[in-house]
Length: 297
Image 1 (cartoon, rainbow, N blue to C red):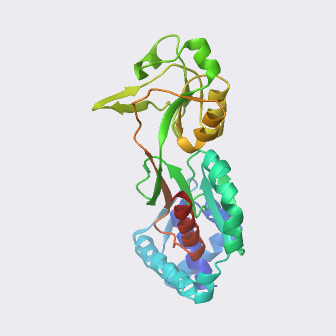
Image 2 (cartoon, one colour):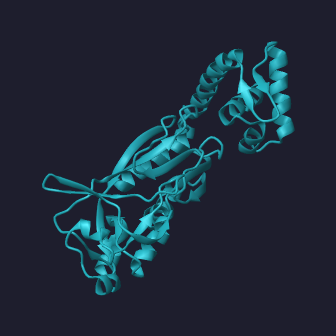
Image 3 (cartoon, rainbow, N blue to C red):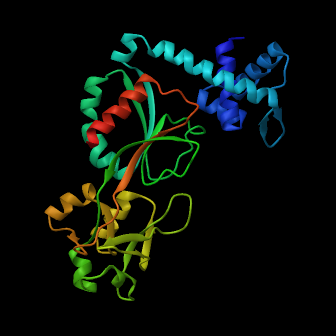
């Protein structure tokens, strides 16, 4: 039995709650993971996990051992990462998940510079606005806009996005130009709805002006959960939009979008990099976080 592999397999089973998911994230067979954990239990002469047909739960002994194992695995990673060569030339596969507009408009255009600096890092990039399971999906880190509601994650604020309200000229010609945000609740106006993650509810528009704060729930004929689709729906005149300025800037310059509600403003949207607390931040993750932070600056 390789003790390192066995401890890593045990830790991943605890984190995912499943031998099958642990095997997938470790790129091993379920049988191999099961055998490693069984061999670890035999060596320790202790039962670490309670298994049923539907779930896996850690025992009291297993929970105590898990805390020690996590620290030990992190220390081993630190030892590897402390070598100057590893810090100077981090390598390996980096699994990240980022919002689709952010990937298309900010990250992808800048990636050649990152690759030139760190040629040994191989990206596996999920591009969507869905909320991923970092442990279950074996993702190293995510970039997300808005408040991080998962308290189990460590989040580092890397910037903020300036927001504004916009509409296409075709929409304004048809529905008229609203002068006050409350007009978006009138029967003849429409917004493009953006679906909140892991729910079927549509985000409201929170705006303020000179101490007045309102939350607007506009009427919509389409609601989407993807930023690129949201933008296109607005460009073709399906309703008004609330967009980060970086998404609207080029379309404003070409006259494809018109700014609305002069004097009203949105709270800036915070942007975070988040990662699991029990997963050591390797050199490749560190340089990615530093690079994204500089990119947004």
